[in-house]
Image (cartoon, rainbow over all chains, first blue to last red; front, side, top):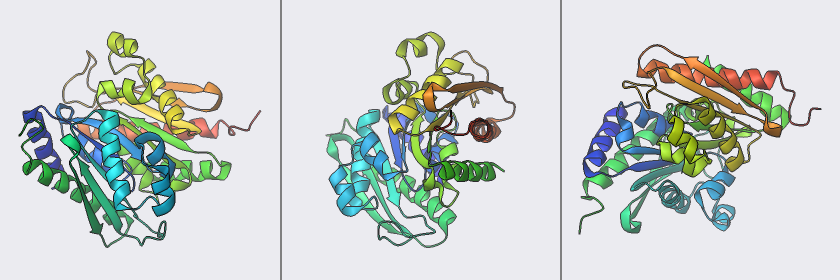
Length: 165
Length: 165
């Protein structure tokens, strides 16, 4: 199902001549791996950043260090800044970013299953959702990947592209 | 088996107080996803770059544009430059990078299954191997991931760490 969503995103964006990128924390590359499992993904997917360590979110994606210091890495504003940042550094039309706690231990005072997902698009458009997931590390990562792709597809379907009025 | 290799890399590096990063082309995040499937991976894994599109290899990892123009993205020198580049941008002690053709179509004149893997370490140490893989897109990506982690582990086991003489 996740690969089917990825395939829809790719064909939709390729048709529009647009691209997308990912910034992954708790998933560690799983979203990119899922997307590139689809043959022909290079028509719309450019790549992205695996910002697993907190300092890479600042270093590679420009997430403000004071935000990370004040709120930790698992926060809606961090997801938003990761999405905006990876869109900027890759030059992609769209970007999706995830940060959260896969477990088994809580992180930065946030319980296991706390996940934030951000989508950044043309003209500074931004959507962030707060996911509360249950299950073990494996299922939290899989569900985060599914929900991130679902969120991106949903945003794309309600937005007719960067050249729309 | 691949997760077991990842777990060995993590415990070995955590013991040494060292870290590693990845730069992924054809695997698109699969190596990072495999590594972060191991609970406690943050003790040694910092993240990295998914440089799926050729221009991201230059843009995010500093792979020379003239090299990419002359040789294409699937070349041992590109794997070496990706490994060196991601080690630099992340500040990790070690880095492993892969570039190649997962298929179904040939790329830059290279046949499906052509894969190059580079490992970069302290003091500019560098190892690049040429893999000729068979199978479909899925199995080429899985085997690339396995072999990249095997290569990194092999290099780590023959190198006693950045503080060695």
